[in-house]
Length: 459
Image 1 (cartoon, rainbow, N blue to C red):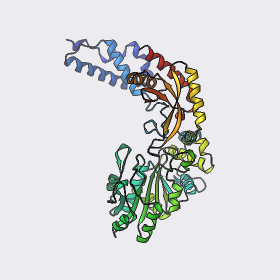
Image 2: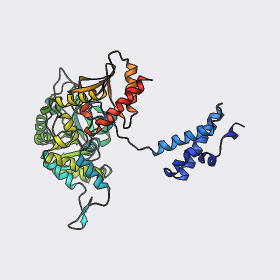
Image 3: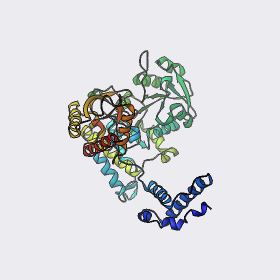
Image 4: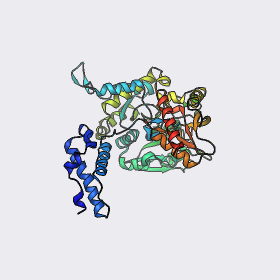
């Protein structure tokens, strides 16, 4: 009897509150959602609950429709101070890279077409030319991320043979990406040498056999081993590889083209240095310290790169047109010696401390009571420069008497703003770091702070 009180699909869809949904979803889709909402209600009734009102069902249907039509991603304001925040999309693109991606998406283009000959052209010709010029590599290739680049490289040159890795570099990085697992998928056989904290050149020398294809160096990316440690330099690794006629593969992960010590940071391995030291293939990312879109870039000896290019896996890993366009625009910034000004990641890393204090103080002045300016540290993040920080100034919201629960409530309120603001909490104080807040986001951030402080004050 209770089930009979539930409305029909047609009656539910006729609810005035749902009228606006007819312009957002097709009638057939709304019918399916209505049936789903009614089936949920029947299940609840069968479990002993009361039948929901038509208003409640209408509200549920509205929620289902809105969740279906919501954007796949939303813009957020990154006030955490983590420059390469993996959960927030890592590197924001330069204006030129954004424009290039948009232009590539608007219509037809010469993606794989040679306008002079009228025949099929190279998909990655422009990107490969920029990579080789910037790194000194003989040839280059690009795939959809660095994990794919490493997998493609190992599969192409080491399948069925041994690859020697220091035990301290048989690492796992974000998302469960493990070097031993990648080696297994590639068909290569892992040979670990040395110990977690100390590996010597003699360890590599003793492990090389006629079955050895390559020596693999892996940048730890997101952790450090400190204290009683020993590792082998890339030039020394290349030296023994040349003597024993095996390859050297260098997984840099981050993809740094600028000297990080200029900004008070530890030295990050640079792609040019790896190529110059003689690594046969170098793998690196496009969306970390390079500051571009997600991509896996490969530079190295011409005959090896050609082997990767011809491998069947290469097609499964290829880049789309928008990524190629934005990647080329990003690389061009380096060629023009304008990366510090045009690429957001490098602009953030090179921002003077006095400028960060000025912005944080301006925010404090605009907000008034409940806000203050404090010293703190920004993190690099994104599997780059593990443990490295830069001094910064932050806007602090709250007081020393604030509880952890109050700080969490304030941070949650900031995340409910439009656009959401993601902050960090230190010692029960909410901190907003201007290093990672884009200049055009200032007013939106202040509006979110005012609303969050007001809502938590009266909650």
